[in-house]
Length: 175
View (cartoon, helix red, strand yellow):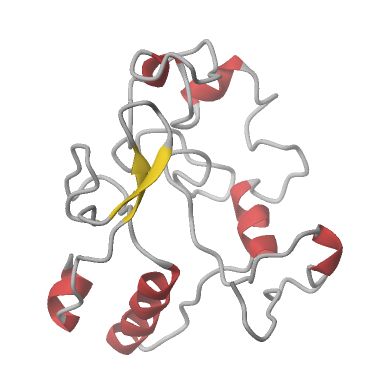
């Protein structure tokens, strides 16, 4: 909100949101201010484009003296797993997941009966307030579940294309 106000970046453009049947559909009127469900300043921002995320990082660097960047996919994986090698930063990724992340669970299934969900309930049908779940071993919150995050990489069809040095996968005409 501070970035959008300071730069006068419009909260328009639409985004994909869940429709009444539980499918993702593009809604032209949806925005980070009104994604179609209750959000406030304690929730993670949603409904922003990759260009919005990049512009925010550029602006943040002008406000702070620099050093910020969108993580590469491999950097994101590393910090989300807190340096571990398991698929999830908690024990086994089973039904204890609701104690660690906002995921597709029984709470969401009450709205979208056709969804394949976990049996547990995290209590948040859409986004949960930031800091609702325990920190990972690096002291970071909310890297699993809740919302999708933008990374610096271009989309790759296979992990074999990803750089092994932590840098982002970049190609001309990146989609």
